[in-house]
Length: 311
Image (tube, rainbow, N blue to C red; front, side, top):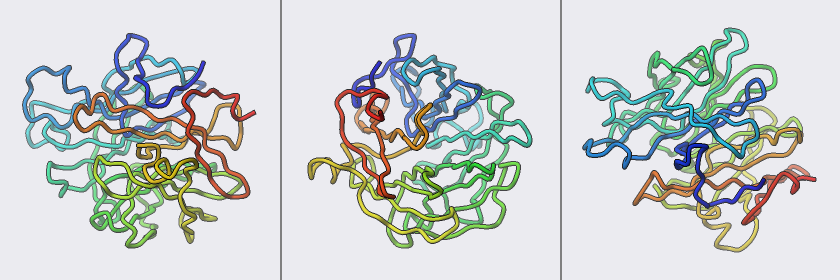
């Protein structure tokens, strides 16, 4: 089986996969892909809908996906709800807490003008939910928009999010139960206007891939490395290889997650979205092999590829 970046990707029932701005959880041999459902056409005539909810898919192999449904649906009957369908629900990420056994989802919650700028924290007993919204917060009393979660080998977890009107990112250590931040955090990439963070670890070092802030339009990715999540981050440049257009537009996509390749330690998949603002439900997925050599990250375009590229 092969990945075909940019091609329409259907689930086992033949529907377009709706996992935009998504993230991945590997649990008990199964992969769970969470993302934004943007298939507005499925709703018919419901006017003013911005949020449908978070949809989950499961797979044993990363190629075939079963739709597990809306695990955190937007609500239509409570206009004051922070997950009302007129609000914004973006970039959901789920990690498992080994101490509590709970599955914890963080996501970006906002209003139409993007002034709410909070994270929503939800919890479930199973990876397929249902997730229950527990609260929304501005982590460490700071604005939060594009975000991701990273769980380290020692069980500690971190929130990485765009803040200060997207001018700067923050890295926050989560509380032991993952239901809030610990109060230990750091400002990073000050004044660089970065969003869409994706975090991974290789060879004891930490890496963040992110994009510039240009709305739905693609731009040049940038990556940075540090010896600890709360350490000093050094910007190392554009990870994309190939033509100047590929480098300038990140293969016409925007980062969302970096996934370790199953059974191949030190190998990764770069997950990104090719946004289609005219039909967000038909935004495509760009999955590409990501390699780290001598501390430097490279991502190359491939029309079709499988795990053998890492051999």
